Length: 299
Image 1 (cartoon, rainbow, N blue to C red):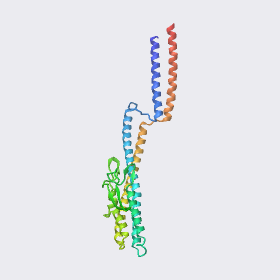
Image 2 (tube, rainbow, N blue to C red):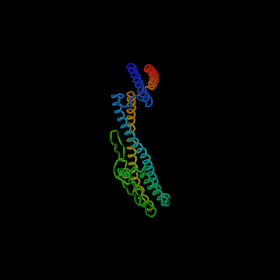
Image 3 (cartoon, rainbow, N blue to C red):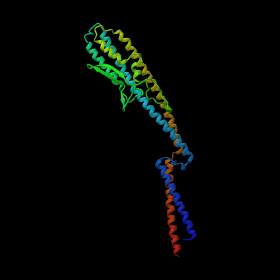
Image 4 (cartoon, helix red, strand yellow):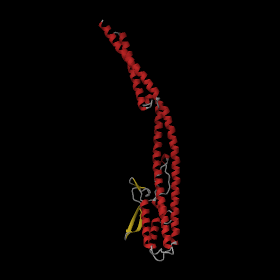
């Protein structure tokens, strides 16, 4: 091969290689939807995009944690509502037993119902999600309430949790602290919800039943439950507002990310077809040049 032929050959091969690299890059952009897939594609854009990705990832983690908190608060609202209904049912039992009519005649039936309501309270506050008890404070793997029975009736209820706060995470690693543990829910009024229910059940079967002595105490218990429910509702609305703010911020950052590294698919496909045609032309020219070089060599 002559020196001139060698130069033409090298130029054609370089063109083929450049077209192959360009085609490969365009095909990668089409497949990924981004024009910057590594630092060498655009160092500045890659650096900014990586920073945005890290920020968005952190925000998404915050949102997932807040979702867990919102789910807990929604569950708590249902539990507190049921506890409130149970307290009102206990009040109805006390009123019926204290009436001048047949209250004493149905005392045994009312006592059974009071016992059932205490058990219902325990079941509600022993709510468990994926192996985690919701109302044990920081002792989330410990069942919060244990009942002791005697003669088929509940004699006592023990709280095994602590005064820890539920996992209500805030963006940036903070925590929203509201008293929604078994201690605050059942004893926050100064009265013990469980012990009061048992006391009512025992007193119902006594002849000299004083309903007034229990009505005021039940009122305090209900007031505490309503307060806890109100606090939970306020916390839920606060988390909702934070989540909406984070969602908007994430959307803005994703648009910024897209403007940095996104590719115009129509343009990329058009360029890919153009480069592919150029590559085929270069390969044809290289083939013809090789044939001419062979002829010249044989002469």
